[in-house]
Image: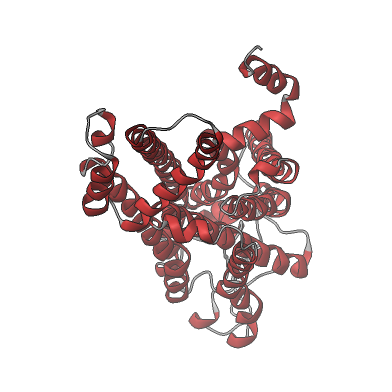
Length: 414
């Protein structure tokens, strides 16, 4: 590539992980291109528009995830085991908006890093850390939903153990730190030289496609395969329960006894654990009525008791199936958005590293990089879209009067 054409693209190559010098593995450390980062070849109006869009995206990311964190703090109804993982995801996405984006915006617009090498290292470390943590949190959320649908009894039995989700949340950050940050901090010393010129800020391993392929496998491909498996398993579980007719048999009020229905569910239902979970829920709901019936002077017919138990059991089964359907849909939306935002950047990063940046257009690479960060901006809106509890919590913070009006309208008049 000619020097003049290289200069025109230097500002795009320098942003985030761009490079304008020969890496160590291609020559001695002091053999670097003498080119300095140039100003972007954009008009002032385009630069102002780009700056406004970048700042707006950062603000949306910060405010949206702050809203999730505040909702979790203020609303006790959200302090459910699975919602702790959403909190962990919101913290990692908040760090993207409050630290990674603001430091990157002037670098993207000017093509020059003005904040020094130390802050460059810190920014790279935080960027890789929080982005990896965001991915691993999505995997953890998918796994938690998978257990809640397919292993209902054991899942509910562990809900009271607060140490369990906390340990998993901490483990997410530990795994995320072990993936990229050691290479960010130590690559220069292990290779014996640096590929980063003055005024640039990028990882030393940016053109080492072997490392990028291995790290991307752990950061994207394995998580994507995992969450896909969890989603397919959840949908398969729901379809199996519908197909085997555990609910359609309950909907028709026949004269069969409740014991026959239970035997049918035990033999043909989704699993023994799911049936035990439904039976135990029904029995808990019927205890107050049974106690009151025992104290009343009237005698309850055994047939009526069987019918009540059967109706409660079927209603509980329908409710649980509907809840699992909502879980599956919401999880599928979150995972699809994750795949759409992360796949282009991951693939282009590997391809660009393999061809030393010569086969991927810099602007295309830059767009995929921002698409990766957009995922952190979209997650809070996905919570509100997919979860009624988050909708109510957001309304409680943003529109408390409207929430009070809705509750007063729902309250039956005496």
